[in-house]
Length: 420
Ligand code: AMP
Ligand code: MG
Image 1 (cartoon, rainbow, N blue to C red):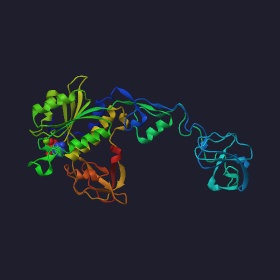
Image 2: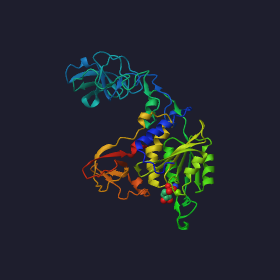
Image 3: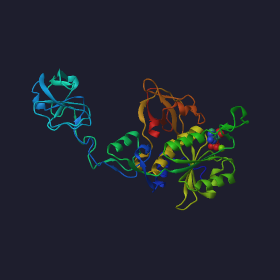
Image 4: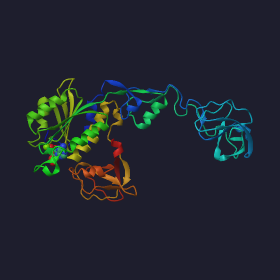
C-alpha cells in the first residue's frame, strides 16, 4: 500500500475512475412524468413536426400582407379562430380574428398583434366586424412556423442525456409517453465510526461523552437519491475489522456500488483498508485536494461480478466535496452519461472579494458565495468538519495549489448547480 506515495492529481484520479466503470447494461421504460433525473438509454425521435402547423404567436388578426399596402388600411373581419379550432381558408381582402396558438388559415401570411389594430363596429356575435391595421405588416409577421422547434424524424434528445424538467417537456411535446432509461444504480451505503450515534436514537441531552451525530449518512443518502440511485442504507458499522468485512460482503450482494464514509485514513482505527483488501482489491489514493485527501477505490468480490467500492473520508465537508467531484461522475457514468460531459467542471471566471494570504500545497475547493455585486466571498471557517459552510455556499472556488488570492483577482467559481 502506497502510504507514502506522492499525492495523486485530482483530474487523473477522476479520469481513472471514469475509465474503470462502464454504463449499466439494463434499461427500462418509465412514464415521462416519472423520468426526472434519469438518463436516456435511447434517442427520443420526433414523430411529428413541432409546432405541427403554422400558428399564431399573438392574439391579433391574420391577413395577407399584400392586402395592407399602408398603415390605416381597414379590412372586414371574416372569421374568428381560437386556439384548437381550424379556420376556413382566408377570403381575399379580409382579416381573421385569431388567438395565440391557433393555426394560421390557408391564404394568410401575417398576423398583426391586437395592440397594433383598432377594432371597428361590433359584429352580431360579438367581436369586431372590421379592423383598422395600424402598421404595414411584413410577410411572416408573428407566425410560428411548422417545425421551427422540432423537425419530424430528428433526435430531439440524445442517448446519455440526463432528463431535466425542460427535457421532459420536450419529450412530451413530441408525444413520448414512455422513455427508455438506464436502470437506477443500486448503491449500498454505510458509515463507520464508533463515536457516531443516530438522531432519534439518542437525544441531544443524553449524548455520551465523545459522541457525535452521524451527519454523513443523511448527506450521502440525499446525494445518492438526487442522482437517481436506489439506496440500501446499511447504517452504522463498528470500527472492527471483522464487522467491516461482514458489512462489505452483505453490501456486495445485489449492488453496483458500495459507498462508505470514514475509516479510510491510515490510523489503526481505520479498518476499511484491510477489510477491502481481504474481500477484494483496493487502491487507496491520497489525492492532492483539500478538503478530502484520502479516498479509497476498489472492487469487492472480484471478477466480472464484483461490486465497485468507494470509501470517502469521514469529515463531513470532505465526504461531501469528494462525493461531488468524484462519486457523482461515476454514478452518472454508470447511467450512461458520456465521459466527455463528466470531467472536472470548468469554473466561471469571477472577481474575488476575498484575500488569501497563505498558499496551500494542495488544490483547494473553498466554500464560496456571490455577494450583491456578483463577486466571490468565502465562508470564514473552511475546516473540513464545518458542515455549516456547505449549507451556506452556492459554489466552490477552485484554487490551484500554491496560489495566493487578492481581492479583485479573477478566480474560478464552480456553482453548486454544476455539481447537481
Ligand atoms: P475518519 O475519516 O473516520 O478518520 O473521521 C474523520 C472525522 O470525521 C472524525 O472527526 C469523525 O468523528 C468525523 N466523522 C466520521 N464519520 C462521520 C459521520 N458519519 N458524520 C459526522 N462526522 C463524521
Ligand atoms: Mg473513523
